[in-house]
Length: 374
Ligand code: SF4
Image (cartoon, rainbow, N blue to C red; front, side, top):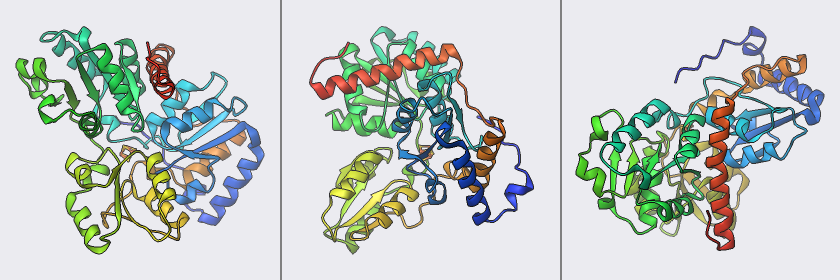
């Protein structure tokens, strides 16, 4: 999806980091409680310095919802995260993305036209009343609305298993998008195997499958991935283990199956942060996730050796578009009364997407209480 960010004024592009930080601090102080800056775990350190809250995309959106006095929510993340914040916050709150080009390559691998076309193709060969669509949080608002309107739910990397268990109480199959790896890794954790899964390639007729495949399979996994997490390979684990035989390897479930099979632990960003905190002093921990989070965990846990298992891993380049010049520009614009780069989701999409998000919340809270969910 093309989103064009207008070039910034020379005032911001030519300023030093110190000048930009001074302007950001001054604007923050002027806006006070009217402003709430959210920093995703994968964000760069110079931006995180100014974040009022840190977290994953869903947690940050909920925190914004819980701050009704904050008129301006500046989301230092990527586009789908700002959309989710707009869905969950009130009409009195305006969500701003400092750089409109901060998208997510994984979220962009499934658009609403492709998903609607997929559904129509499947309607011709299977009973879609028994097919439950599940979308990962890393997807556009339009996809969240689609699953809300078709009896499905959103999931995060933390609750994907609970959401899939819920789906199989309602149907025989799931259509899982946009991340095939999260769907596959969760399916394996639930006891399914490769023969229960087929990859749906939206660029091919009937997803590149035949009618029998569609009928037989339990998981239809959208051919999408995160280019950052897919880079980690089993050879990186072997290399880490050679250097640290007692060390542990933790992988994010957006990594490919062959990597997750050789990792010691698999979990979301929240899981990784907690696992590092709980590890004994002196531990060596190799991590397969975005490099800014890994580096931050290293500096915040100086008593442990923490490294990315891929020494050449690059940061999430779209997330890194949020930099000091863009943050200074949006905050100074807000001080002047302008609201640049506001992200808005229309009413109909918001209503259906909320259904899908609320189902996820109900599933998670009922599972915590050990109760079934409607
Ligand atoms: S790390 Fe991957 S999934 Fe996360 S925002 Fe970047 S491209 Fe998207």
